[in-house]
Amino acid sequence: MTKITLPPHSKLLAPEFTFGVATSSFQIEGAADQREASIWDTFCAQPGRIKDASNGLVSCEHIKHWREDLALISDLGVDAYRFSIAWGRVINADGSVNKQGLQFYIDLVDGLLANGVAPHVTLYHWDLPQYLEDQGGWLNRDTVARFAEYAEVIGKALGNKVAAYATINEPFCSAYLSYEAGIHAPGHKNRKEGRQAAHHLLLAHGAAIQVLRKHAPEAEHGIVLNFSPCHAFSDAAADRAAAELAHAYHNLWYLQPLLKGSYPDLTHVLKADELPDIHPGDMQLIAQPFDFLGVNYYTRTVFRAKNGWFSDVPPTEPPLTTMGWEIYPQGLTEVLTQLKQQMQGLPPIYITENGAAFPDVIEHSADHNNAENTVHDPARIDYYQKHLLAVDDCIKAGLDMRGYFAWSLLDNFEWAEGYSKRFGIVYVDYTTQQRIPKASALALRDFWRARRAQWQVAEAL
Ligand code: FCB
Image 1 (tube, protein in one colour):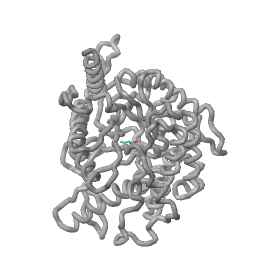
Image 2 (cartoon, protein in one colour):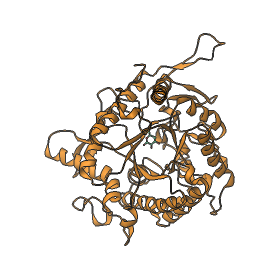
Image 3 (cartoon, helix red, strand yellow):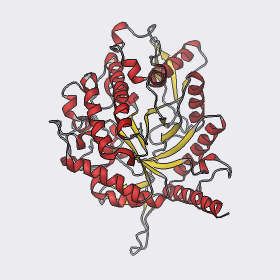
Image 4 (cartoon, protein in one colour):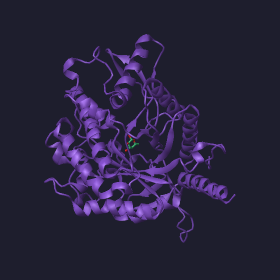
């Protein structure tokens, strides 16, 4: 596959729909010496935590190369760029503002606007300052107030220049993977902690959204959740119940409090001391109106029953990505349709992340005077094509889809997987920091540019 196309009347082609590319701070920035340490620095320094024993100290050196990266973004013909702010690059351990760090994000936002690209900012994409983790991190209720203070600094500095603010990226990961499954920083393994961290993350969302609205009344405000349809391994009643439990535990646990002000009732499987501590007024703070739901979608998950609980069954049948994830585009339409049926009041949706890691190889040009090195990644082009059609299907199914962001602009630090998994549409040579657009970047660029050209034709008529 070399091209991306959509049916001529697809709503995705209209100017109202937002297309963009996405990144996150810890995964690309580097320049660790200019910020406070985060829980991911600590985690990376622990032997055995990261598959290739790497870290985020240098990464893509985006702080140094951001103008070049901005040029890449602008060249793609996207409407928007989603990035996250490193909390520890903005707020020092003593609570003072790191002026140089904050200025970086102000310059980035101004640079995007000067290039006609709308900034979509995420405040928290997992890189909690270590100084807060030292006080208990997301298990400490005070972290909620610290997050609101940080949101105030960002809201004041960037205000209405930002088109959309997302408070938290994937609380499932920062709670479940981080405090319950031990896979992400800080690497704890405790069910009660997972539930408590989730509650505090959602509270932090509620507190921050109020502050952000005050300082950026014209911007859209929301949160980003990750969803995966939960399928049963077999038709056996126990497996079906396990898949249903996984859906409640992994998907609804984060969406239901936002929309209904309650957690799914799992008291039949969770012990009383595994439930989060909830103070009066908490659920109201969490459940206040928000303008958009960001959805990160990658794959589906299959579950079977195990010891009264659920256990995921890793896929083995191709096509799989190098993450071992099944390519399952229809799952995007399926899970969103299911959530719309289950939950009243679903706000407009942006797909804030979607993409795939493949074993990309760089093909060096035989002609040494010609710097045209390329990466042929037809499987990634095919992945994008199929998922864009799935977004189109969501619209046809009555979902209010507002945008789509490809994950990711650049190859980057893929958390516990290190640099071994390449999700970028732009290849990064980590030894030279050279950026090389892959064939998928060119296919998306052609698609995005053709879309814009069409509006110009329409305008001229
Ligand atoms: C998501 C994360 C993002 C990236 C992709 C592959 O869960 O939000 O940072 O790692 O997965």
